Structures are given as C-alpha cells and as structure tokens.
Length: 159
Image 1 (cartoon, rainbow, N blue to C red):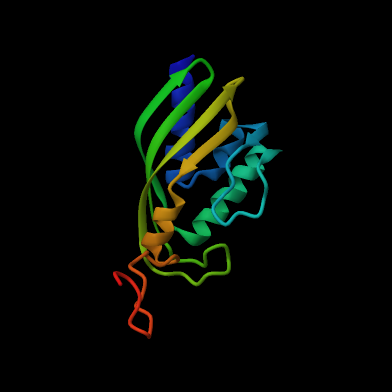
Image 2 (tube, one colour):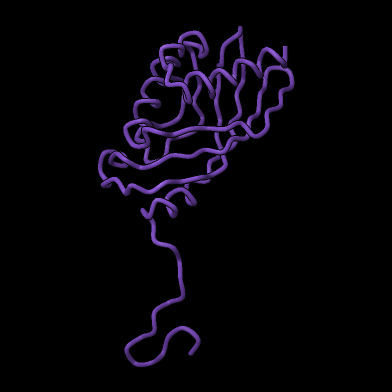
C-alpha cells in the first residue's frame, strides 16, 4: 500500500502541479478533502473542502502568480496511509501576489514539506510546512533585515 500511496502523491506533484494537468484532480484527490495548510496570502481558512475544486482553485491561484512554478521531489516516504514528501519549490513572480502586490519578476527557490493522508486510493488530507519567509525575501516583497540606521543625533547601531 505504501508504494501505491507514494505513486499517488507523485501524481499530485508531477502530473497535476508540474505538468499543469489540474483536470486530474478528481482522480487523485478525494471529494471530502481536509486542507490543513493555508496558502500564502490565502483568504480561505483550512478545513473540509471539495477536494478537486479546492485543488483547481489553489492551482489557478498559484499559476496566476507563478506561471513557471515547479516542485522537484527530493525525498518521499510512506507508512501506512501517510506519505511525506520534501520538495524544492521554484517559480518566477510574473503575476500580482494575491492579486494585490505588483509582480516583482524575481524568482524564488525554497524547500517545502508536504504530508498527505490517503484513503480509498485518493488523497484525503494535506498538511504543509513551507518556507514562505525565504520566498518573500527572495521575491523582494519583504525587505531583508539589516543593521538599524544611525539616528540623526549620532546614536544608533553600535553606539
């Protein structure tokens, strides 16, 4: 069962996400799907959703911002009905972030961990741990931290 579950998660990454085949969501994701991960800048709270519709909406949301987004599987493991995958996610910001922040034209490259529970041959739950801070720094959306600026009276960093 673990090998079949890993193959299912590979389809989620490689066929739906990387190959832009979102129409396969109904084959891969359960109708009663529990999303535990909120999307970056997302407006929808995690919880029980219509799986295929949620995947299509998430895919459209991401592609509008990062048309070339990709995930490369670096490691995958499964035990019973749970599959864990570590990916290297990359993309170029060519569309407005969350429809509000102008595109930066910059790329990001970050690692993410995704966990899935499989039931009846479909993905039924999803958790994610993403490095959104590094992505936002790379995209220039959040300024990189630096030393505090000196105050006009000469007192400041290092004073």
